[in-house]
Image (cartoon, rainbow, N blue to C red):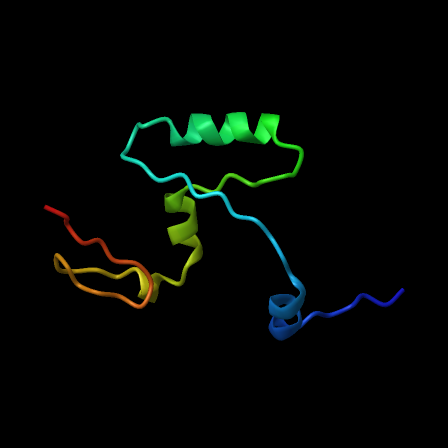
Length: 80
């Protein structure tokens, strides 16, 4: 049995998906809302928290030693 190998280009051109983003402060019920959506919606949606998402990136993308330091991955900017 031959297993197909898909390139990133093939996937990018042929993959359609919906993404639901829940944005809010810490302890604002985002995880609870995500779990309820998973139980109510017909389609399957994985629940991936921002901490999990950040930990999937290479460490060099998330190395921040100074406030407001911009990285190739993520950075945090205070909003006043």
